[in-house]
Length: 317
Image (cartoon, rainbow, N blue to C red; front, side):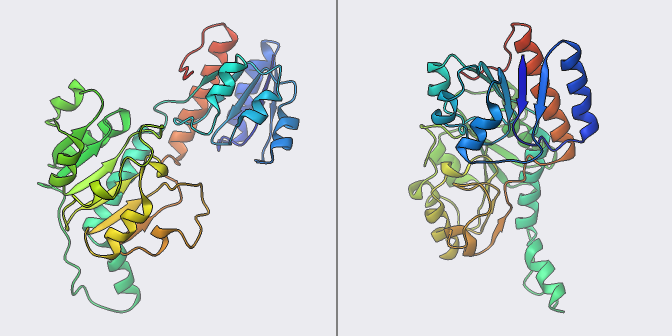
């Protein structure tokens, strides 16, 4: 079988060499590319003749899938797979697996870091020191005793709840199904509107689907407390960015930490959140730690190994 890695996995060459060695010892061919291309024709050229491809968040539309008749399997080195045309995969008999859980700790830690940053006004504190100013007006708030509303209590949302519980936060949650693990932490499930009304901090941890696109709209944002903070380390299209920016600029909420947008970075300067007040923006890095990338590589190549043996794991289609 021919397996093609179409974009870097952000792990060392020595790590990939071990996986290559194992595949070649079993009689397979492994081809890797050290740079990413998004031109469809170039993607097709690179993947030509491949039985399986490995991608991270490289867009993989129907045009590409339909042009690769030998393709049987895609191992996505990402949790979300909304960049892969699953309908085209189904029509062409291409199985798709993802890499669940590889960055659970990394994403949860960044979300909590954003909460601390915003609550303690760390950006303003940094600017004050750089401007040779004092701490006047820079009184922050503790997380202890505050109510954290977690939208989505899957693996990442649950990990956020675990850390927040240790910090002494009160927990509210919204999810399609209630999780006993979350309840054991003291998390109380409620309706989405109630969560937005009662929470001091809201953290988003749901996937981007046709059902969740635009879910967090002006109506929900308008329910938030003026003192509340909004965190999104999930997917950008879930949120109405303009409605959020308007609420920030008009002082109707206290601040926001945003790691994801409707598009991948670079984020256009005219994007509504680029100039929103009290906003901490990061370029989709919640998942990006050395530990997470090593976890990801292991999951991705385990997916490949299982597929080669006729047992597809982590299948999403």
